[in-house]
Image (cartoon, rainbow, N blue to C red):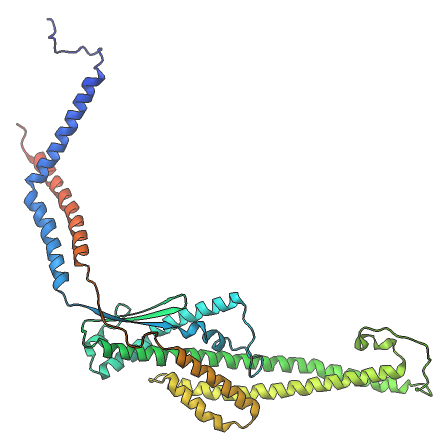
Length: 397
């Protein structure tokens, strides 16, 4: 039987143009099928995406408004903390200089300590207690990082307080601000005093360790001097003339001197060692007195830090303590330390004393749009899935 003109033999290739047209037709059919499924399930997609997104928008839009107030500080961490917390006193006036790298590490450490102390359970409990005392029980219950935000960028520090009542924001923020400005610095002062005491004790230990070596050297020099005096010539004043000695260090090369001059050199060494021992003992007593003074300040903070003890109260304590020390060295040291506390207090104030209260943007449109896009993809996928299940369950015609 002759094949019809529409039949194509198996071994005969199909022109590419025909294949291209067939593929394009199938793609168009597939896209039409997809649109048919979406149109068929349009009510399900609308109810599942548009309606929930609208509910999200209305919920956010009509939810209680939040307000915020932000304080900006030129933080004392960059100015006084590297001095206050280094605790390496060379004298009552000076500190050991810090290298740039050491200062950066110290500053970064102090910033972390500041944030950790501010968000510590101990401090937040104190803030909550002060809020309750002023009638803000509801705000005190949920106090956290979402309500109080503390951030440090370069040398600037921002403290942002967020609340739902515009009328109460100034009063609430003043309580939080007092905590940050007056209470938090006392933690840094406490750590400074602790490390200062340890530093003084280390210096005293070094003096004691060196004193043993100096005492042994002094005894050795005295023994040598005693024996050398027994070796004196009959007339020690008669020294051969015309001899020129070139010695860079007499203490190390005194054996090349005439005997009488060697005795003088050893006498000079003995005097030098005795004076060194005397000065070291004075330093030891000085550091011991400084430890007593510093421990008194440390105990003051230690015993009162659990309550709402402020750096201003500590400054008053230092001022009252000045009358207890009449020795110039201790009085100068205490006065210099008190001045640093004063500087910390003066620096730790906001750039703008009374910033404005701003409304926190809710972003209702943005959040509802994101919700709509996500839900649209989910409902469309479910629509295709339901259509596939329906076609599979339909009986074959």
